[in-house]
Amino acid sequence: MGRSKVNKYEISKSGDQLKRIQSMLATLEMYSMDNSLEKIEEVARKNKDTYFDFLESILEKEFANREQARIARWMRNAKFPSEKSIDSYDFSQQPGLDERNVRELASCRFVSRGQNIVFFGPPGVGKTHLSIAIGKEAILQGIEVKFITLELLVEHISRLDGPGLNRLLRSLSNPPLLIIDDIDYDEPDKIVSSFLFKLIFRRDEKNVSTIYSSNKPFKEWGPLFSGDKHKATAAIDRIHNNGSHIINISGDSYRFKSARRDSKTKTAS
Ligand code: ADP
Ligand code: MG
Image 1: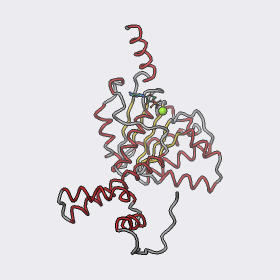
Image 2: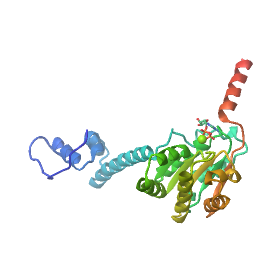
Image 3: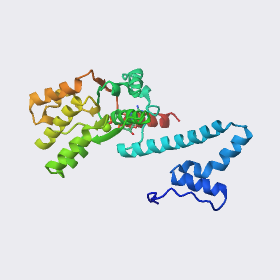
Image 4: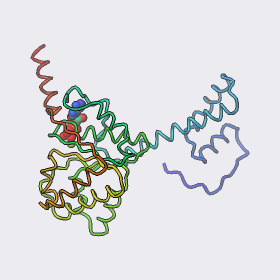
């Protein structure tokens, strides 16, 4: 239920004190305390808290709730296709991947340096998983994130006219961390190529970080830019600017491995 805007901060004199306090808290949108006020007061009395202790515990609770709501909101706005975390990634399945390096990236220091990450590797090795996991860590740290696949980008672009394209370009140029997943289009049309080129340039100019993932090495990115080698080279140069982190994941697909592991356990038992 949406709450209407407050017109007047009216102080009521009727009803019992708790109700009056709760009504004021609701007007001030301090919802978390609406329900737990009696409990907080009881605990404070038992602990013989000072007035300041009491006030602080109330404010801390409100802060914690608002932070939780912020994270949930930013996670929704990021449009991740699923929820993944660093801890749910099984590094033992990718012995060629440097776990310490990935965990360092998850600290998101690369974002404050305006650096990029590029994940390369065949399907199923966890490129998307790790991109989302790093994105989630960024959100926890207060960094806004947007996730998009190249396929979805192509779909958006096909539905937009000139001004719409400019708006999309602006909205994708702004977030401090953008994830462009699955860059494996064979030969997108010229509008898409030119959009992608501009987006890479804009983000580099603004010094904001992007995570790219692709199952094709850079040298096969030519067709993405309509076969224009100069454009491809220029775009890749921009991605490399500021020292980007190139992560090659070359092991087997996780699904393939876990299927094989399952069948092994079955034959063993
Ligand atoms: P890619 O983007 O490289 O094609 P995904 O990230 O989509 O691969 O991974 C496919 C599925 O396998 C996802 O559900 C992902 O969570 C899971 N997965 C891949 N690698 C691992 C791993 N090493 N540990 C745990 N889950 C993994
Ligand atoms: Mg993927």
